[in-house]
Length: 115
Image (cartoon, rainbow, N blue to C red):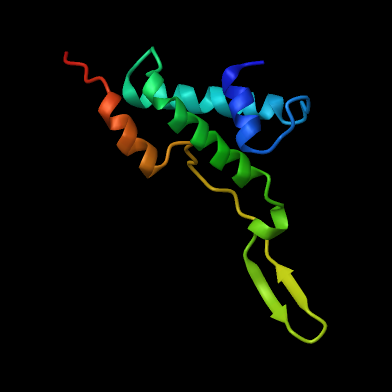
């Protein structure tokens, strides 16, 4: 098993032999790493950013495993016999795996190309 994947499973409390989320976690790792490399204008991934990559994938995984109803806006709440009505979950346009905190860390590793 990949070292990154085993670290993710340990931090997410997923048993090592449980392969339910392996494909999804590997996808998040790949996409986030590629997006980070593109932003930094690099072809090699700096080892110092491994933890940043792992933390980003944890946030993505936790954000995508929340039920759709709980991520939708609340339309109404009735208190007698407790009724909560949710609206439609809206898709985020122009979503990026990179956040402001990550950009600050990656700025140190960004390569500037002069033409």
